[in-house]
Image (cartoon, rainbow, N blue to C red; front, top):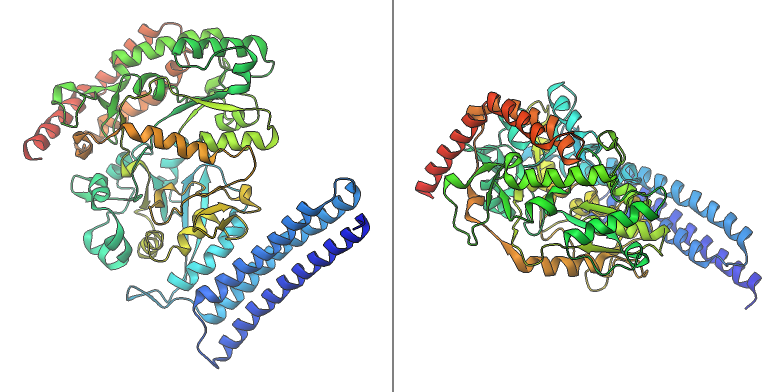
Length: 596
Protein backbone atom coordinates (compact mmCIF):
# COMPACT_ATOMS: atom_id res chain seq x y z
CA UNK A 1 0.00 0.00 0.00
CA UNK A 2 1.41 3.40 -0.97
CA UNK A 3 2.05 6.05 1.72
CA UNK A 4 -0.62 8.28 0.20
CA UNK A 5 -3.24 5.52 0.24
CA UNK A 6 -2.26 4.51 3.75
CA UNK A 7 -2.55 8.13 4.93
CA UNK A 8 -5.99 8.53 3.34
CA UNK A 9 -7.25 5.34 4.98
CA UNK A 10 -6.01 6.54 8.36
CA UNK A 11 -7.74 9.88 7.90
CA UNK A 12 -11.01 8.14 6.99
CA UNK A 13 -10.75 5.89 10.03
CA UNK A 14 -10.16 8.84 12.35
CA UNK A 15 -13.06 10.72 10.78
CA UNK A 16 -15.27 7.71 11.54
CA UNK A 17 -14.12 7.79 15.16
CA UNK A 18 -14.95 11.48 15.40
CA UNK A 19 -18.40 10.79 13.95
CA UNK A 20 -18.91 8.04 16.50
CA UNK A 21 -17.95 10.51 19.20
CA UNK A 22 -20.61 12.95 17.94
CA UNK A 23 -23.19 10.15 18.00
CA UNK A 24 -22.35 9.45 21.64
CA UNK A 25 -22.87 13.12 22.46
CA UNK A 26 -26.18 13.10 20.66
CA UNK A 27 -27.26 9.99 22.57
CA UNK A 28 -26.41 11.65 25.87
CA UNK A 29 -28.46 14.72 24.92
CA UNK A 30 -31.33 12.57 23.67
CA UNK A 31 -31.37 10.61 26.93
CA UNK A 32 -31.69 13.88 28.81
CA UNK A 33 -34.49 15.07 26.55
CA UNK A 34 -36.52 11.87 26.91
CA UNK A 35 -36.11 11.90 30.67
CA UNK A 36 -37.23 15.52 30.80
CA UNK A 37 -40.39 14.60 28.88
CA UNK A 38 -41.29 12.15 31.63
CA UNK A 39 -42.34 9.53 29.09
CA UNK A 40 -40.43 6.71 30.78
CA UNK A 41 -38.26 5.86 33.71
CA UNK A 42 -34.64 6.83 32.91
CA UNK A 43 -32.00 4.11 32.85
CA UNK A 44 -29.64 3.83 35.83
CA UNK A 45 -27.15 6.73 36.01
CA UNK A 46 -24.18 4.46 35.33
CA UNK A 47 -25.70 3.73 31.90
CA UNK A 48 -26.63 7.29 31.01
CA UNK A 49 -24.87 10.43 32.11
CA UNK A 50 -21.58 9.24 33.55
CA UNK A 51 -21.25 6.49 30.97
CA UNK A 52 -21.90 9.00 28.18
CA UNK A 53 -19.10 11.21 29.45
CA UNK A 54 -16.72 8.31 29.81
CA UNK A 55 -17.56 6.71 26.48
CA UNK A 56 -17.33 9.98 24.60
CA UNK A 57 -14.05 10.97 26.21
CA UNK A 58 -12.68 7.47 25.60
CA UNK A 59 -13.59 7.63 21.92
CA UNK A 60 -11.98 11.04 21.55
CA UNK A 61 -8.85 9.83 23.29
CA UNK A 62 -8.75 6.75 21.08
CA UNK A 63 -8.94 8.93 17.99
CA UNK A 64 -6.13 11.09 19.31
CA UNK A 65 -3.95 8.12 20.26
CA UNK A 66 -4.64 6.38 16.94
CA UNK A 67 -3.68 9.46 14.95
CA UNK A 68 -0.46 9.82 16.91
CA UNK A 69 0.44 6.14 16.56
CA UNK A 70 -0.25 6.08 12.82
CA UNK A 71 1.74 9.18 11.91
CA UNK A 72 4.41 8.17 9.40
CA UNK A 73 7.97 9.19 10.24
CA UNK A 74 8.73 10.38 6.72
CA UNK A 75 5.55 12.48 6.52
CA UNK A 76 6.44 14.89 9.32
CA UNK A 77 4.60 17.91 8.01
CA UNK A 78 1.34 16.05 7.40
CA UNK A 79 1.64 14.23 10.71
CA UNK A 80 2.23 17.44 12.64
CA UNK A 81 -0.82 19.03 11.08
CA UNK A 82 -2.94 15.96 11.81
CA UNK A 83 -1.70 15.76 15.40
CA UNK A 84 -2.48 19.40 16.07
CA UNK A 85 -5.96 19.08 14.61
CA UNK A 86 -6.72 15.84 16.43
CA UNK A 87 -5.43 17.22 19.75
CA UNK A 88 -7.74 20.20 19.39
CA UNK A 89 -10.59 17.85 18.54
CA UNK A 90 -9.86 15.73 21.61
CA UNK A 91 -9.86 18.71 23.95
CA UNK A 92 -13.04 20.15 22.48
CA UNK A 93 -14.63 16.72 22.50
CA UNK A 94 -13.92 16.18 26.18
CA UNK A 95 -15.40 19.57 27.02
CA UNK A 96 -18.50 18.86 24.93
CA UNK A 97 -18.85 15.43 26.50
CA UNK A 98 -18.83 16.88 30.00
CA UNK A 99 -21.41 19.47 29.01
CA UNK A 100 -23.63 16.83 27.44
CA UNK A 101 -23.38 14.61 30.48
CA UNK A 102 -24.25 17.52 32.76
CA UNK A 103 -27.31 18.29 30.63
CA UNK A 104 -28.41 14.68 30.77
CA UNK A 105 -27.79 14.55 34.52
CA UNK A 106 -29.95 17.59 35.05
CA UNK A 107 -32.71 15.95 33.08
CA UNK A 108 -32.37 12.68 34.97
CA UNK A 109 -32.47 14.61 38.22
CA UNK A 110 -30.11 14.86 41.15
CA UNK A 111 -30.32 12.57 44.14
CA UNK A 112 -33.15 13.21 46.59
CA UNK A 113 -31.95 11.03 49.47
CA UNK A 114 -28.84 9.25 50.69
CA UNK A 115 -29.19 6.48 53.24
CA UNK A 116 -32.68 7.82 53.88
CA UNK A 117 -31.41 11.38 54.52
CA UNK A 118 -32.84 14.28 52.52
CA UNK A 119 -30.26 15.68 50.06
CA UNK A 120 -32.68 17.52 47.79
CA UNK A 121 -30.84 20.84 48.19
CA UNK A 122 -27.70 20.99 46.04
CA UNK A 123 -24.40 21.90 47.71
CA UNK A 124 -20.81 22.43 46.59
CA UNK A 125 -18.08 20.90 48.70
CA UNK A 126 -14.53 22.24 48.93
CA UNK A 127 -11.66 19.89 49.70
CA UNK A 128 -7.97 20.63 50.34
CA UNK A 129 -5.28 18.00 49.68
CA UNK A 130 -1.48 18.04 49.51
CA UNK A 131 0.60 17.71 46.38
CA UNK A 132 0.75 18.87 42.78
CA UNK A 133 -2.42 19.50 40.81
CA UNK A 134 -2.71 17.16 37.81
CA UNK A 135 -3.16 18.64 34.37
CA UNK A 136 -6.59 17.07 33.83
CA UNK A 137 -8.03 17.87 37.26
CA UNK A 138 -10.86 20.03 35.92
CA UNK A 139 -11.69 17.61 33.15
CA UNK A 140 -11.92 14.72 35.62
CA UNK A 141 -13.89 16.77 38.12
CA UNK A 142 -16.48 17.54 35.44
CA UNK A 143 -17.00 13.80 35.11
CA UNK A 144 -16.78 13.16 38.85
CA UNK A 145 -19.36 15.83 39.61
CA UNK A 146 -21.87 14.11 37.37
CA UNK A 147 -21.52 11.02 39.55
CA UNK A 148 -21.75 13.02 42.76
CA UNK A 149 -24.83 14.87 41.57
CA UNK A 150 -26.55 11.56 40.85
CA UNK A 151 -25.67 10.11 44.25
CA UNK A 152 -25.61 12.90 46.85
CA UNK A 153 -26.70 16.03 44.91
CA UNK A 154 -23.33 17.71 45.37
CA UNK A 155 -20.34 18.91 43.40
CA UNK A 156 -16.71 19.02 44.52
CA UNK A 157 -13.98 21.62 44.20
CA UNK A 158 -10.49 20.39 45.09
CA UNK A 159 -7.62 22.69 46.00
CA UNK A 160 -4.01 21.52 46.14
CA UNK A 161 -1.46 22.70 48.71
CA UNK A 162 2.05 22.47 47.26
CA UNK A 163 4.67 20.45 49.09
CA UNK A 164 6.90 23.50 49.29
CA UNK A 165 4.60 25.54 51.54
CA UNK A 166 1.75 23.37 52.78
CA UNK A 167 2.88 23.63 56.41
CA UNK A 168 2.71 27.42 56.22
CA UNK A 169 -0.79 27.45 54.72
CA UNK A 170 -2.52 24.46 56.33
CA UNK A 171 -3.46 25.87 59.73
CA UNK A 172 -4.15 29.32 58.29
CA UNK A 173 -6.78 27.90 55.94
CA UNK A 174 -8.57 26.18 58.81
CA UNK A 175 -8.35 29.21 61.09
CA UNK A 176 -8.99 32.02 58.62
CA UNK A 177 -12.56 31.18 57.76
CA UNK A 178 -11.90 30.04 54.19
CA UNK A 179 -14.57 27.83 52.65
CA UNK A 180 -13.38 24.34 53.50
CA UNK A 181 -15.43 21.21 54.05
CA UNK A 182 -12.87 18.42 53.74
CA UNK A 183 -9.19 18.46 54.70
CA UNK A 184 -6.50 15.88 54.12
CA UNK A 185 -4.76 15.08 57.38
CA UNK A 186 -2.45 12.47 58.83
CA UNK A 187 -0.27 11.74 61.81
CA UNK A 188 2.48 13.59 59.94
CA UNK A 189 0.11 16.28 58.68
CA UNK A 190 -1.12 17.98 61.87
CA UNK A 191 -3.95 15.60 62.74
CA UNK A 192 -3.33 15.61 66.49
CA UNK A 193 -2.56 19.34 66.58
CA UNK A 194 -5.59 20.48 64.60
CA UNK A 195 -7.87 18.05 66.42
CA UNK A 196 -6.73 19.52 69.74
CA UNK A 197 -7.43 23.02 68.42
CA UNK A 198 -10.97 22.06 67.49
CA UNK A 199 -10.41 22.56 63.76
CA UNK A 200 -11.96 19.20 62.84
CA UNK A 201 -15.51 18.01 63.42
CA UNK A 202 -15.94 15.22 65.95
CA UNK A 203 -17.33 12.17 64.19
CA UNK A 204 -19.61 10.56 66.73
CA UNK A 205 -20.95 7.01 66.31
CA UNK A 206 -24.42 8.47 65.70
CA UNK A 207 -23.11 10.84 63.01
CA UNK A 208 -21.28 8.00 61.25
CA UNK A 209 -24.22 5.60 61.41
CA UNK A 210 -26.55 8.22 59.94
CA UNK A 211 -24.34 9.57 57.15
CA UNK A 212 -21.71 6.91 56.47
CA UNK A 213 -23.21 3.45 55.94
CA UNK A 214 -20.19 2.29 53.93
CA UNK A 215 -17.80 3.31 56.70
CA UNK A 216 -19.91 1.23 59.09
CA UNK A 217 -19.88 -1.70 56.67
CA UNK A 218 -16.35 -1.69 55.29
CA UNK A 219 -13.96 0.41 57.41
CA UNK A 220 -11.47 -1.59 59.47
CA UNK A 221 -12.29 -0.97 63.17
CA UNK A 222 -8.57 -0.88 63.95
CA UNK A 223 -8.20 2.15 61.69
CA UNK A 224 -10.87 4.04 63.63
CA UNK A 225 -9.23 3.04 66.90
CA UNK A 226 -5.89 4.42 65.69
CA UNK A 227 -7.57 7.71 64.76
CA UNK A 228 -9.33 8.07 68.12
CA UNK A 229 -7.74 10.53 70.54
CA UNK A 230 -9.01 10.65 74.11
CA UNK A 231 -12.17 8.85 73.06
CA UNK A 232 -12.93 11.21 70.17
CA UNK A 233 -12.68 10.54 66.43
CA UNK A 234 -11.96 13.49 64.12
CA UNK A 235 -11.02 11.81 60.82
CA UNK A 236 -11.64 8.70 58.72
CA UNK A 237 -8.32 7.04 57.78
CA UNK A 238 -7.54 5.10 54.67
CA UNK A 239 -8.64 1.48 54.82
CA UNK A 240 -5.36 -0.23 54.00
CA UNK A 241 -2.09 -0.68 55.86
CA UNK A 242 1.24 -2.04 54.71
CA UNK A 243 4.69 -0.91 53.67
CA UNK A 244 4.16 2.84 53.82
CA UNK A 245 5.70 5.76 55.63
CA UNK A 246 9.21 4.57 54.84
CA UNK A 247 11.76 6.57 52.86
CA UNK A 248 14.09 5.09 50.27
CA UNK A 249 17.10 6.38 48.38
CA UNK A 250 17.06 6.26 44.58
CA UNK A 251 20.13 7.17 42.54
CA UNK A 252 21.11 7.42 38.88
CA UNK A 253 22.42 3.97 38.00
CA UNK A 254 23.85 5.25 34.72
CA UNK A 255 26.03 7.74 36.60
CA UNK A 256 27.25 5.11 39.08
CA UNK A 257 28.26 2.88 36.17
CA UNK A 258 29.87 5.84 34.42
CA UNK A 259 32.16 6.25 37.45
CA UNK A 260 33.04 2.54 37.47
CA UNK A 261 31.51 2.01 40.91
CA UNK A 262 30.11 -1.27 42.20
CA UNK A 263 26.54 -1.48 43.48
CA UNK A 264 26.10 0.70 46.55
CA UNK A 265 25.47 -1.19 49.77
CA UNK A 266 27.16 1.02 52.39
CA UNK A 267 27.02 4.61 53.55
CA UNK A 268 30.66 5.17 52.56
CA UNK A 269 29.90 4.02 49.01
CA UNK A 270 26.92 6.36 48.83
CA UNK A 271 29.09 9.26 49.96
CA UNK A 272 31.68 8.40 47.31
CA UNK A 273 28.96 8.37 44.65
CA UNK A 274 27.94 11.88 45.74
CA UNK A 275 31.57 13.02 45.53
CA UNK A 276 31.83 11.64 41.98
CA UNK A 277 28.68 13.49 40.95
CA UNK A 278 29.99 16.72 42.47
CA UNK A 279 33.29 16.43 40.63
CA UNK A 280 32.03 15.22 37.26
CA UNK A 281 28.54 16.58 36.55
CA UNK A 282 27.95 20.24 35.71
CA UNK A 283 24.61 21.62 36.87
CA UNK A 284 23.75 18.49 38.85
CA UNK A 285 23.69 18.32 42.65
CA UNK A 286 24.22 15.00 44.42
CA UNK A 287 20.97 15.96 46.17
CA UNK A 288 18.81 18.94 45.28
CA UNK A 289 17.68 19.07 48.90
CA UNK A 290 15.23 21.45 50.53
CA UNK A 291 14.08 22.34 54.05
CA UNK A 292 12.01 19.14 54.05
CA UNK A 293 15.04 16.88 53.53
CA UNK A 294 14.12 13.20 53.86
CA UNK A 295 17.54 11.68 54.54
CA UNK A 296 16.75 11.11 58.21
CA UNK A 297 14.35 8.29 57.25
CA UNK A 298 16.83 5.81 55.76
CA UNK A 299 20.00 7.14 57.42
CA UNK A 300 18.83 7.68 61.00
CA UNK A 301 15.44 6.09 61.66
CA UNK A 302 15.77 2.89 59.60
CA UNK A 303 19.46 2.55 60.33
CA UNK A 304 18.79 2.44 64.06
CA UNK A 305 15.38 0.67 64.02
CA UNK A 306 13.67 3.61 65.70
CA UNK A 307 9.85 3.61 65.68
CA UNK A 308 7.57 6.56 66.37
CA UNK A 309 4.49 6.77 68.52
CA UNK A 310 1.90 7.98 66.05
CA UNK A 311 1.18 11.70 65.98
CA UNK A 312 4.30 12.54 67.98
CA UNK A 313 8.06 12.99 67.72
CA UNK A 314 8.51 10.44 70.53
CA UNK A 315 10.41 7.29 69.59
CA UNK A 316 11.62 3.96 70.93
CA UNK A 317 14.10 1.44 69.64
CA UNK A 318 12.47 -1.73 68.32
CA UNK A 319 13.12 -4.39 70.98
CA UNK A 320 13.16 -7.33 68.57
CA UNK A 321 9.62 -8.45 69.37
CA UNK A 322 6.14 -6.97 69.32
CA UNK A 323 5.81 -6.44 73.07
CA UNK A 324 5.38 -2.77 74.06
CA UNK A 325 8.60 -1.45 75.66
CA UNK A 326 8.63 0.10 79.14
CA UNK A 327 7.95 3.83 79.35
CA UNK A 328 11.60 4.55 80.19
CA UNK A 329 12.58 3.54 76.64
CA UNK A 330 10.90 6.53 74.99
CA UNK A 331 12.73 9.71 74.00
CA UNK A 332 12.20 12.92 72.06
CA UNK A 333 13.55 11.96 68.64
CA UNK A 334 15.47 15.08 67.71
CA UNK A 335 17.69 14.99 70.83
CA UNK A 336 18.61 11.30 70.67
CA UNK A 337 22.23 10.24 70.16
CA UNK A 338 21.19 8.72 66.83
CA UNK A 339 19.89 12.03 65.52
CA UNK A 340 22.89 14.01 66.74
CA UNK A 341 25.13 11.62 64.78
CA UNK A 342 22.88 12.15 61.78
CA UNK A 343 23.21 15.95 62.11
CA UNK A 344 26.99 15.53 62.06
CA UNK A 345 26.77 13.48 58.87
CA UNK A 346 24.58 16.12 57.26
CA UNK A 347 27.02 18.82 58.35
CA UNK A 348 29.87 17.00 56.59
CA UNK A 349 27.80 16.47 53.45
CA UNK A 350 26.62 20.06 53.44
CA UNK A 351 30.17 21.35 53.81
CA UNK A 352 31.23 19.12 50.91
CA UNK A 353 28.59 20.84 48.75
CA UNK A 354 26.27 17.89 48.20
CA UNK A 355 23.41 20.40 48.07
CA UNK A 356 23.08 24.15 47.65
CA UNK A 357 24.10 26.42 50.50
CA UNK A 358 20.69 28.03 49.92
CA UNK A 359 18.83 24.71 50.08
CA UNK A 360 16.69 25.90 52.97
CA UNK A 361 14.98 28.32 50.57
CA UNK A 362 14.66 25.83 47.73
CA UNK A 363 11.02 25.74 46.61
CA UNK A 364 11.56 23.31 43.73
CA UNK A 365 10.27 19.84 44.48
CA UNK A 366 13.13 17.36 44.95
CA UNK A 367 11.21 14.88 42.84
CA UNK A 368 11.01 17.38 39.98
CA UNK A 369 14.75 17.99 40.23
CA UNK A 370 15.44 14.25 39.98
CA UNK A 371 13.11 13.84 37.02
CA UNK A 372 14.74 16.79 35.24
CA UNK A 373 18.29 15.61 35.86
CA UNK A 374 19.22 18.35 38.33
CA UNK A 375 19.56 15.93 41.24
CA UNK A 376 21.49 12.66 41.17
CA UNK A 377 19.40 11.18 43.99
CA UNK A 378 15.88 11.18 45.36
CA UNK A 379 14.85 10.32 48.91
CA UNK A 380 11.11 9.77 49.27
CA UNK A 381 8.48 7.09 49.75
CA UNK A 382 7.47 4.45 47.22
CA UNK A 383 6.53 7.14 44.70
CA UNK A 384 10.22 7.25 43.79
CA UNK A 385 9.37 4.63 41.16
CA UNK A 386 6.84 6.98 39.56
CA UNK A 387 9.53 9.66 39.49
CA UNK A 388 11.90 7.25 37.77
CA UNK A 389 9.25 6.45 35.21
CA UNK A 390 8.68 10.13 34.49
CA UNK A 391 12.42 10.72 34.23
CA UNK A 392 12.85 8.02 31.60
CA UNK A 393 10.01 9.22 29.44
CA UNK A 394 12.18 12.05 28.15
CA UNK A 395 15.58 10.54 28.91
CA UNK A 396 15.49 6.76 28.40
CA UNK A 397 19.27 6.59 28.71
CA UNK A 398 19.03 7.74 32.35
CA UNK A 399 18.67 4.62 34.47
CA UNK A 400 17.96 4.28 38.16
CA UNK A 401 18.20 1.96 41.15
CA UNK A 402 17.07 1.92 44.77
CA UNK A 403 19.68 1.85 47.52
CA UNK A 404 18.76 -0.16 50.61
CA UNK A 405 21.58 0.27 53.10
CA UNK A 406 19.89 -1.88 55.74
CA UNK A 407 18.29 -4.95 54.12
CA UNK A 408 16.59 -7.31 56.50
CA UNK A 409 15.95 -4.78 59.26
CA UNK A 410 12.39 -4.56 60.62
CA UNK A 411 9.95 -2.33 58.69
CA UNK A 412 7.06 -1.21 60.83
CA UNK A 413 3.57 -1.80 59.50
CA UNK A 414 2.18 1.58 58.59
CA UNK A 415 -0.57 3.23 60.58
CA UNK A 416 -3.92 3.58 58.90
CA UNK A 417 -3.68 7.18 60.08
CA UNK A 418 -0.68 7.76 57.86
CA UNK A 419 -3.36 9.23 55.55
CA UNK A 420 -6.85 10.37 56.55
CA UNK A 421 -9.64 12.80 55.70
CA UNK A 422 -11.30 15.18 58.16
CA UNK A 423 -14.40 17.35 58.00
CA UNK A 424 -13.69 20.95 58.97
CA UNK A 425 -15.49 22.06 62.11
CA UNK A 426 -16.53 25.20 60.22
CA UNK A 427 -18.05 23.27 57.30
CA UNK A 428 -21.52 24.48 56.35
CA UNK A 429 -22.38 21.05 54.97
CA UNK A 430 -20.80 18.45 57.28
CA UNK A 431 -23.40 15.79 56.53
CA UNK A 432 -22.87 16.04 52.78
CA UNK A 433 -19.10 16.05 53.29
CA UNK A 434 -19.51 12.82 55.27
CA UNK A 435 -21.53 11.33 52.43
CA UNK A 436 -18.76 12.18 49.97
CA UNK A 437 -16.27 10.33 52.18
CA UNK A 438 -18.70 7.44 52.39
CA UNK A 439 -18.93 7.12 48.62
CA UNK A 440 -15.17 6.70 48.51
CA UNK A 441 -15.42 3.87 51.03
CA UNK A 442 -17.97 1.87 49.05
CA UNK A 443 -16.34 -1.44 48.12
CA UNK A 444 -19.34 -2.72 46.18
CA UNK A 445 -19.63 0.26 43.82
CA UNK A 446 -16.23 1.82 43.19
CA UNK A 447 -17.24 4.11 40.32
CA UNK A 448 -16.86 7.32 42.35
CA UNK A 449 -13.62 6.09 43.89
CA UNK A 450 -12.14 5.33 40.47
CA UNK A 451 -13.26 8.67 39.03
CA UNK A 452 -11.49 10.62 41.77
CA UNK A 453 -8.40 8.42 41.97
CA UNK A 454 -7.94 7.17 38.42
CA UNK A 455 -9.79 9.64 36.18
CA UNK A 456 -11.80 8.64 33.13
CA UNK A 457 -11.70 5.02 31.99
CA UNK A 458 -10.31 4.67 28.50
CA UNK A 459 -8.57 8.03 28.77
CA UNK A 460 -6.46 7.96 31.93
CA UNK A 461 -6.67 4.26 32.66
CA UNK A 462 -7.83 1.02 31.04
CA UNK A 463 -9.33 -2.08 32.64
CA UNK A 464 -7.76 -5.13 31.04
CA UNK A 465 -9.50 -8.39 30.21
CA UNK A 466 -8.00 -9.98 33.34
CA UNK A 467 -9.42 -7.22 35.56
CA UNK A 468 -6.14 -5.38 36.09
CA UNK A 469 -5.62 -1.68 35.46
CA UNK A 470 -3.28 -0.23 32.85
CA UNK A 471 -2.41 3.30 31.88
CA UNK A 472 -4.63 4.99 29.33
CA UNK A 473 -3.46 7.13 26.40
CA UNK A 474 -3.48 10.30 28.54
CA UNK A 475 -2.39 8.80 31.87
CA UNK A 476 0.30 11.42 32.43
CA UNK A 477 -2.39 14.10 32.67
CA UNK A 478 -4.02 12.39 35.65
CA UNK A 479 -1.66 9.93 37.39
CA UNK A 480 -3.31 7.29 39.54
CA UNK A 481 -4.25 8.52 43.03
CA UNK A 482 -3.17 12.17 42.66
CA UNK A 483 -3.03 13.11 46.38
CA UNK A 484 -6.12 11.15 47.48
CA UNK A 485 -4.29 8.49 49.52
CA UNK A 486 -6.70 9.10 52.38
CA UNK A 487 -9.41 7.18 50.50
CA UNK A 488 -7.36 4.11 49.64
CA UNK A 489 -8.90 0.72 50.26
CA UNK A 490 -8.09 -2.75 49.04
CA UNK A 491 -11.11 -3.14 46.78
CA UNK A 492 -10.74 0.28 45.22
CA UNK A 493 -7.15 -0.20 44.19
CA UNK A 494 -7.71 -2.36 41.14
CA UNK A 495 -4.56 -4.52 40.77
CA UNK A 496 -1.99 -3.05 38.47
CA UNK A 497 -1.27 -5.03 35.38
CA UNK A 498 1.44 -4.16 32.91
CA UNK A 499 0.90 -0.43 33.32
CA UNK A 500 3.16 0.24 30.38
CA UNK A 501 4.64 -1.85 27.62
CA UNK A 502 7.44 0.68 27.17
CA UNK A 503 10.90 -0.45 28.34
CA UNK A 504 11.12 2.38 30.86
CA UNK A 505 8.11 1.26 32.90
CA UNK A 506 8.98 1.12 36.62
CA UNK A 507 5.73 -0.35 37.89
CA UNK A 508 6.80 -3.98 38.02
CA UNK A 509 10.00 -3.00 39.77
CA UNK A 510 7.96 -1.19 42.40
CA UNK A 511 5.83 -4.28 42.96
CA UNK A 512 8.89 -6.52 43.18
CA UNK A 513 10.65 -4.17 45.59
CA UNK A 514 7.56 -3.94 47.79
CA UNK A 515 7.26 -7.72 47.93
CA UNK A 516 10.85 -8.01 49.14
CA UNK A 517 10.46 -5.32 51.80
CA UNK A 518 7.19 -6.73 53.11
CA UNK A 519 9.07 -9.82 54.27
CA UNK A 520 10.35 -7.72 57.15
CA UNK A 521 7.13 -6.02 58.21
CA UNK A 522 6.40 -5.99 61.94
CA UNK A 523 3.44 -4.68 63.95
CA UNK A 524 4.75 -3.57 67.35
CA UNK A 525 2.27 -3.62 70.22
CA UNK A 526 2.96 0.05 70.99
CA UNK A 527 1.20 0.95 67.72
CA UNK A 528 -2.10 0.64 69.59
CA UNK A 529 -1.24 3.48 71.99
CA UNK A 530 -2.41 6.99 71.19
CA UNK A 531 -1.06 10.01 73.09
CA UNK A 532 -3.75 12.53 74.04
CA UNK A 533 -2.03 15.93 73.80
CA UNK A 534 -4.93 18.03 75.05
CA UNK A 535 -3.48 18.65 78.53
CA UNK A 536 -0.13 19.74 77.08
CA UNK A 537 -1.44 21.47 73.98
CA UNK A 538 0.28 24.80 74.76
CA UNK A 539 3.60 23.11 75.43
CA UNK A 540 3.32 20.98 72.29
CA UNK A 541 2.64 24.03 70.14
CA UNK A 542 5.77 25.76 71.46
CA UNK A 543 7.92 22.62 71.08
CA UNK A 544 6.71 22.02 67.53
CA UNK A 545 7.45 25.63 66.60
CA UNK A 546 11.02 25.16 67.84
CA UNK A 547 11.26 21.93 65.84
CA UNK A 548 10.24 23.73 62.67
CA UNK A 549 12.82 26.43 63.39
CA UNK A 550 15.85 24.25 64.19
CA UNK A 551 15.32 21.00 62.29
CA UNK A 552 15.74 22.26 58.70
CA UNK A 553 19.07 23.94 59.45
CA UNK A 554 20.46 20.92 61.29
CA UNK A 555 19.20 18.41 58.71
CA UNK A 556 20.95 20.38 55.98
CA UNK A 557 24.12 20.94 58.02
CA UNK A 558 23.73 24.70 57.68
CA UNK A 559 24.98 25.52 61.17
CA UNK A 560 28.48 26.32 62.35
CA UNK A 561 28.46 24.01 65.37
CA UNK A 562 26.16 20.97 65.66
CA UNK A 563 26.58 20.47 69.40
CA UNK A 564 26.00 24.13 70.19
CA UNK A 565 22.87 24.26 68.01
CA UNK A 566 21.40 21.10 69.55
CA UNK A 567 22.16 22.44 73.05
CA UNK A 568 20.43 25.72 72.21
CA UNK A 569 17.39 23.87 70.83
CA UNK A 570 17.25 21.54 73.83
CA UNK A 571 17.45 24.42 76.32
CA UNK A 572 14.60 26.26 74.60
CA UNK A 573 12.50 23.09 74.34
CA UNK A 574 12.95 22.33 78.02
CA UNK A 575 12.00 25.90 78.86
CA UNK A 576 8.88 25.41 76.73
CA UNK A 577 7.77 22.35 78.72
CA UNK A 578 9.39 19.32 77.07
CA UNK A 579 9.77 17.53 80.40
CA UNK A 580 6.10 18.13 81.20
CA UNK A 581 5.14 16.61 77.84
CA UNK A 582 7.34 13.55 78.41
CA UNK A 583 5.97 13.07 81.93
CA UNK A 584 2.39 13.25 80.65
CA UNK A 585 3.23 10.85 77.83
CA UNK A 586 4.75 8.29 80.21
CA UNK A 587 1.82 8.62 82.63
CA UNK A 588 -0.73 7.90 79.88
CA UNK A 589 1.40 5.12 78.41
CA UNK A 590 1.79 3.35 81.75
CA UNK A 591 -1.96 3.59 82.37
CA UNK A 592 -2.53 2.07 78.93
CA UNK A 593 -0.03 -0.71 79.60
CA UNK A 594 -1.86 -1.60 82.79
CA UNK A 595 -5.17 -2.26 81.01
CA UNK A 596 -4.19 -3.29 77.45
